Image: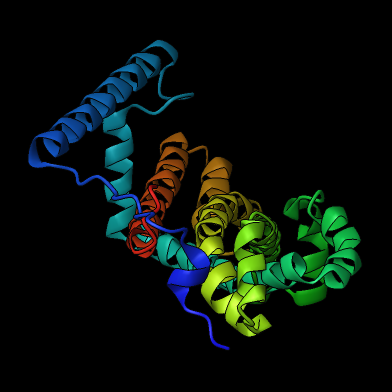
Length: 275
């Protein structure tokens, strides 16, 4: 006997929640608040720079000038491209591997019991602890840095996905079983739709942690990248270059997170889930 999505995943007379639309007035208000926040931040930054001097804190103007200098000779662009490539490959592999493993752990008890000791052990070891081993085992090329970022992302996505599977309403599973649904039907029509929000949350968290990892990996073993730029700037005593690298990391992370958030909103909209 087949099972339909309506029968198994939605209680009678229950309509999905609508995600509120952001109107023009509200959108302008949000943009205004963002602009105000940026102006306040720049003002505080300028005051701190004036207090401590350029040898310790580069001012916004000095940082902008240094950014133009690094952009003109290609250093900044090459660093952004190199770091982005490593982050996206490692993070993408972490999501692709972590989501299916999380689904297996959440659904199959013997798999959960077998893998849980390893997950609980390795997830508490920070990726920076493996930087030296990664360089020794995999060399100073791209592989070592991608593997470190993968290591960062995979456990976060796995744990969030498995938590989503185990949070599925038990009554839905019992209803599906009573209607004769197969394991694959339950997975596709009940478990997976309910777990998507957890997977997306795990992906966003993993992206943030990937940025933490890339800096330490590039400081130790990279000739190009934002982490390498920050470390090289320190060696040359260019505080303004250090600020450029740090701010570029923050802006890049902000852009990536906003893109992921937009994707998450589109995916969750059809399930009536608010984000």
